[in-house]
Image (cartoon, rainbow, N blue to C red; front, side, top):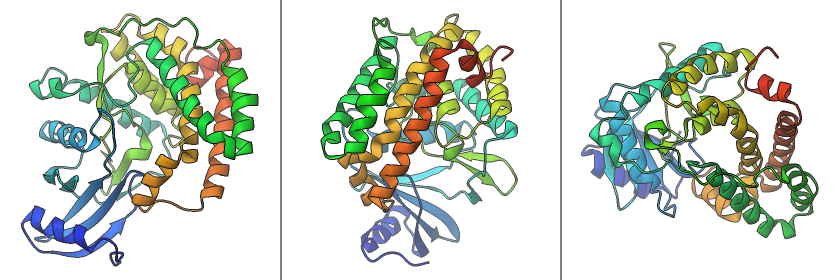
Length: 342
């Protein structure tokens, strides 16, 4: 494979950052916000991840470096960070040979749960205190409502030029969400009940190593959050693909562990699951936002815009059907969470 002609300067920066010559350089598929190059340095494969400029208070470049350093030093199965360059927002880290898992079965769900719980063993380290809230953290029920309304408002702003998006928002999603986010408490979850969360957590950010184990990637949204959000995101993420047995295994490991230190955990899990599901309906539609598509283009991940948006709208409609069923019937909520006897 060869490097596209527009990024030779990235190779040169990698050489300077790593302090050695590089060869066999190639751009690889990465996340929607970043470019990732695979190079060889001194016979070792290295990943160069170039973060976009981002914005707001959550610096994805700095957060990912600190999170990977914390977990790597503790022996968690993450790539080992090697060097960084703040000016170019580049992180060099150990290349993990592996492939994306085909599905999230019970064994994979157990591995996800084990990783999330092992991460909590680091919460009392001094390095853990450096982190602020995770990106899009929901440390109160009112924060869930603010996030929903903020995302909905932004999509409404761009929907004037897209009749299909406008119709979905106005005729399907908004009526389904009516009243769901009213009167939610603004009380912040006590720090003792918050967890360290990768935030964008699920099988979609894993690689299966040649030894069969999973390596965990992408920690640019890392920080403190409600464990309910971490659990629900793993269950409902569109790229997660957990079946009922996998969900049951994941919950059997995480719910008792979190509830042990958080008496309100299970009640919040049931109450917030449909609300966080509604937010996922909106997250799926990020492809309609110009700023999101610009990041995709920068990362070399853009494709056919119209086809991508049509596919995302279909997925959002499917997710909305799942969430409204959860709201209408407690048995559907229990089934979605693999709880109870449903």
